[in-house]
Length: 323
Ligand SMILES: Nc1nc2c(ncn2[C@@H]2O[C@H](COP(=O)(O)OP(=O)(O)OP(=O)(O)O)[C@@H](O)[C@H]2O)c(=O)[nH]1
Ligand SMILES: [Mg+2]
Figure 1 (cartoon, protein in one colour):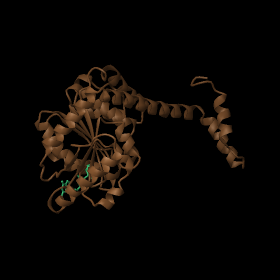
Figure 2 (cartoon, rainbow, N blue to C red):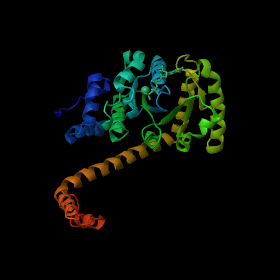
Figure 3 (cartoon, protein in one colour):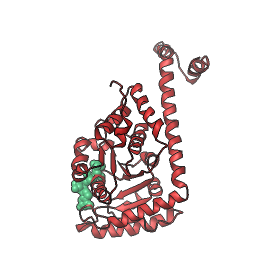
């Protein structure tokens, strides 16, 4: 990619082409492209930070995209501008996320002041990383009121989801108590809101039952009061969106008042800066010591044992990036 600057004014107008270009530069593997994005963010991130960032997580097929379509459309009707990011390595299974996500968000994707960025369609960039954080920063810079992030968020990645968002909503399938025990403890402790999804038709009763089970499980495992943060919902029936949104907003505002939101964001900024630091460090030194690495690998060819001390002795010969 050739690096011409993206217009910050265009981004602030939520111009789709400018946003897409900034994101492409951010996801580029060419460092010069990434630096252009940094320049944009350096000028502007701190000026205004009105976006609320909400991650929607849950196992594949629980209905995250469908929920975002319904929830996002509702929020748009309230007058909010919306950005949606899908980070979903698993949707490769369901034949390319671009089609999958967009076809589940047909109404939302047609609205003005809505920007939908599907996940990269190769799993190379599919996971959560510094790119994801910076994409969100770009959306913040554009001034979107609400940024929704779709992520599978199971296993290791739930801690990363926490590093991206202000609010973490977990979608759950209606299930029996036995299955509930299978839910990873980590995710139960991390989610701010629980929605037992697909609470319609035959699943309605099971969903209500699951809600009670989750309530009592959370009562045992969480210090904080989770009252009013567990819902059943159906993206087909769409009943109760207002209650969900009011609860999310009330919770967000109270966290903000306590200074928690600012603290979380500051910690996230540090987390990703550290992440970026180590990545660059690794790249830089990998490049610098390319020759030395080859010598080490050649030793292995000659039957010599190569251990950490051999590597450390290479590093200690150098005193810093330019030494
Ligand atoms: N009964 C019922 N089905 C739903 C509901 N929401 C979504 N579905 C169906 O569930 C399936 C999966 O929905 P998606 O929205 O694609 O789920 P997802 O969690 O985004 O899936 P991945 O992105 O592949 O992880 C689709 O067939 C939907 O039609 C709901 O509220 N009720
Ligand atoms: Mg999806």
